[in-house]
Image 1 (spheres, rainbow, N blue to C red):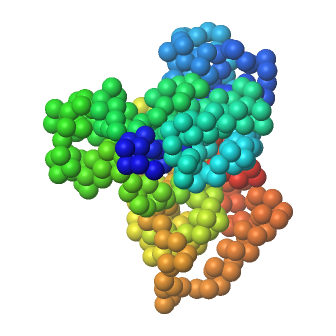
Image 2 (image 1 turned 30 degrees about the vertical axis):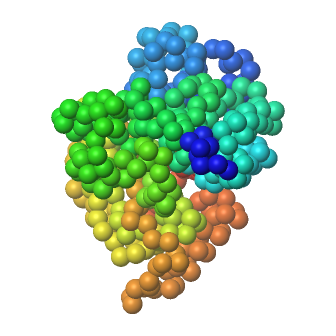
Length: 409
């Protein structure tokens, strides 16, 4: 291929399902189609919408809107308690449908998929044809009410941005020859990884538009960011690939909104114990050890609380429960609303160096528990420390990971 064609090459196709949870509900129940629908973790005015159909979004309701507020904005809004097993089932079907068109490189979340383009697929017209083929495959093989937006770009980061630029059912290409000017119509907050705090940090330095951000040198952007991530971003926005930077798994986490009857310390502790056991089982299943643990509590009417501790490389449930017990001693009083646990500092099993005091019998015990629970169902056997947790904290919704269909309970 001639060098003059390089400006029209794209290396990634990124798929973002539109209002995925709400669309799945409308696909399963045709009577909901064309109506404002909001998916919620549980039926309570104090909880928030976690997905809203486009009919509901037209009333100004979006992800995070409180149910009570949503009812005021749209009295005809239909609220559906989400069931993660349905979303996992449709997710699996979507991945399979995409695979009939091109290989899936990475499953980024339950509603986002990244595919690497190679050879002639990188030509813009060929990539657009593949995108159309993917959309058609989802419609014919999975469901007529499921739509997606697709982004095409020279790296995965930009492809994700492109997928978000036209919704619903969009197709946007960011070409090397148009970068970074093609991003000027966005805002810094539109960039993945830029949250409220980073936006405020940038605004304090008069970086309040993408044009100003893109005008900075790599060194200036690093200083503005306060870390090497700023310099990496400079290269990403110009279409460069950063090997290994966009696919590292940083944590395994679980969280749960507490039902009203569990919003006291005793109930919250029962739930967070259950979440810790789930996270530990997932850690082992995915082949990692953790070196840090963080516990989070959100309260009604007061600031949230976080605590963390370092660990020797471990995947032992008992280690995490002991760490939880120590961290929980510092939890403040209040009306508990949401609890969460995150295992971080992940080390692949292939890189794990056994500690001199590591007890191999503990590893065999955990493996036996995992095997028995997979064979006979969740909670067939469990640690005595979580006996009182019973069937509480079923996993209802997962955005950033794809839980197993049998993970509920």
